[in-house]
Amino acid sequence: MERFVETALKKSEMSEPPFRCGMEAVLDLVGGKWKLLILYHVCRQRLRFSELRRLIGDVSEKMLSQQLKEMVADGLLQRIDFKTVPPHVEYEATAFGLALGRSMQPVCEWGEQHMEAIAAIAEARAARQ
Amino acid sequence: MERFVETALKKSEMSEPPFRCGMEAVLDLVGGKWKLLILYHVCRQRLRFSELRRLIGDVSEKMLSQQLKEMVADGLLQRIDFKTVPPHVEYEATAFGLALGRSMQPVCEWGEQHMEAIAAIAEARAARQ
DNA sequence: GACTACACTTACAAAATGGTAAGTACTAGA
DNA sequence: TCTAGTACTTACCATTTTGTAAGTGTAGTC
Image (cartoon, rainbow over all chains, first blue to last red; front, side, top):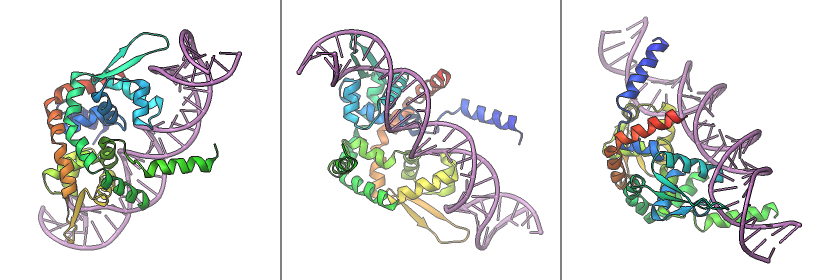
């Protein structure tokens, strides 16, 4: 098949059904390594940049800043700038982000309930490699 | 600080609290690009390798095989080999995997309900870059 | 006067992730 | 005989993601 035909096919595929199921759509929005975690924390309370950084623990400032920027642009979070010096900024979930966060509630609970098992699985996985 | 002190500190940090919240634990388990999608499909019905590949659409065989192997080893899925030639293999969710999958139900539903909005957001994001 | 904290940004490097194409061993169907 | 399909694996390379370290400007604290 020629290249331009392939391209056209791909385009028509993209413009009609962007996602095959709800999960794909959600993953597009919060599929990164940190976004779900950020959303989780911000849904519980408004947070400053440095508070978020401490809560998550091992994100670099670069990553946090990058992901926050995207999440604000995507309408999941709101950035509240107090315009002071030194700077004071808070992040809050929008209604949209909050709804997603709430739908994650059962997942979080499952994770908490099985935390020990998951820790054991993670150890076994590490030992495998 | 000397290196061996750092190492010891890291180890003690690791052995006590592996995860700070349920979400971190879940992400450890299904944090890859495809695992949630695989879990979603397999929770709905037993699936053969090629069926899964067709359902997801743009995974390569390599990735699918890799992720399936990990998910089986992690106890999320069960691999059922019919030991025929040509090969016939099916994947089924374990009770553990099924429970996680079920906790994802609200997330999927939210994704389906907001699919159009998310598609628009994705377009806007692409246009930004 | 040095230090810390705030919320970032930038350049560069490393690591993880992903894709492509080929190959395996065998069979059923055209 | 040729092709397609089954469920993968492997080697190689490209891309994407992530981390590290340093820097920015200001102000309050020791």
